[in-house]
Image 1 (tube, one colour):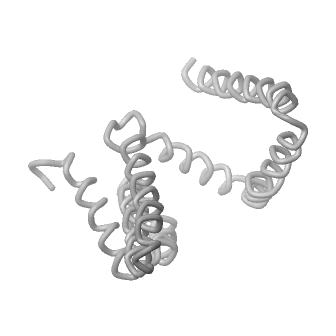
Image 2: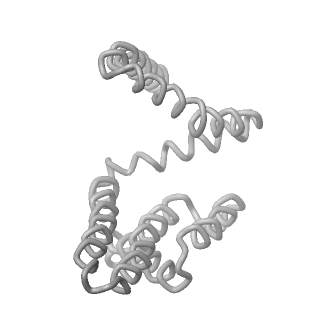
Length: 172
């Protein structure tokens, strides 16, 4: 929108929510957008609000299902559906209105560039983030909170230090 460019993202949020409501699946909507970004038809900055909007659109399914509950369970089902809706709205409020907080966009670009350079990176990333890391956290949590904190905090400090060093290498 030429006269109000800041409004374009919010319209994209709305369009993402409506289209996801129509197809009743955020997976279908976002998996349709992914190859379009890959071939360069749509920029990552334009897909981001569409994806956030699809998170809102997917909550309509739970709201409709909650309204179909029996009258004695309606309060509970509606409460959970509204929790789902407000959780997603809170995520949008945290990661979209202020441009500085849109850090998932540079993170996605970094992961895309690493995968383009090293094809094996995608497999190791998926295995690490969806299997190895949750298994480690589960194992540590079974050991108790003291064990989880004694191992988790130094690991987080190391990752934080690596992040600062990478930023300093890039900027200095």
